[in-house]
Amino acid sequence: MFKLFTKKNDKPQKERKCPKCLGEVPSGATKCKHCGSKLPLELTKSNVIATVIVIFFVIWAVVSCSKSVDEAAKQPKDPKDTARTCAKYEVKAMLKSPKSAEFPWDMNINMTEDGKYAVLSYVDSQNSFGAMLRTNFLCTVKVLDVDNFKCETKCIFNE
Ligand SMILES: [Zn+2]
Image (cartoon, helix red, strand yellow):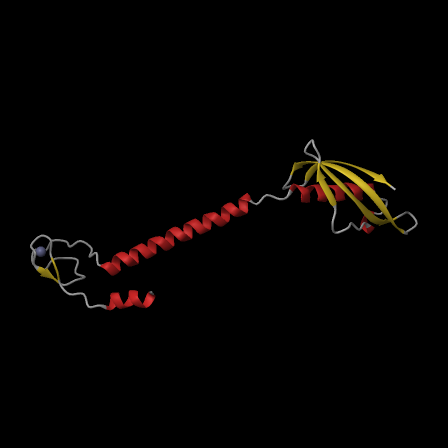
């Protein structure tokens, strides 16, 4: 397609006519050598094609750019992720040795009827004697701000 386009462009463009005096002027001239009037920009096929292609690419660039911005803005954080983070934070605060806390990779998170999240899982952490103990917990998380991890979190341990 590109080859076709350049071939057309390479075609020698011959004289054209001045729209005012109808005298022949070389193609590409901006002024008529006979009457001195300004000549309109020549609308050859290749010129039109080139212009259309340029316009198309500009539109495409603008559309694809705004699209990616939109997609980035439209991709909200999963409230479940926020609920999980809030639950971990709250559970850690209740542990004797928060630094030793190890949570499972997968947590059971379900939305409750009132729009809160029930996080049911367990945590392994050291007790006051330094032994690793597994503690089951159930957290009820009301996500207030998904993006900034603001929640109302209540957790209970069932050992
Ligand atoms: Zn002329």
